[in-house]
Image (cartoon, rainbow, N blue to C red; front, side, top):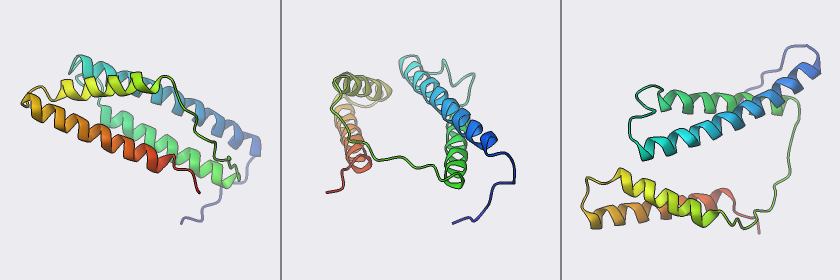
Length: 134
């Protein structure tokens, strides 16, 4: 899409920045997940101090910079096979409870239907993202 070349500098500077961006992305994703869980348990505890939109925007900017530097350095990874995770049922239950808790103003049956539809959509996204090419 864009044909932008990195400035002529030492390649090790870009490799180090690529690795630092990966570390920053990991830390930002972990903190964002913790913020979402805290916000789901006690609404307003995080969003009254920090805008979650700004954190999400920072994540997308770091992802974009990592992809840009990685493509210019010709860094590529193999697609790994997805293994079954023992923690997945616990995460599904946690997601179910957090989504259900955020819909408490709806009637009980509406809450259950909306929560199940959201979890089903998450499952479809999971299959779409991690689909094996057959």
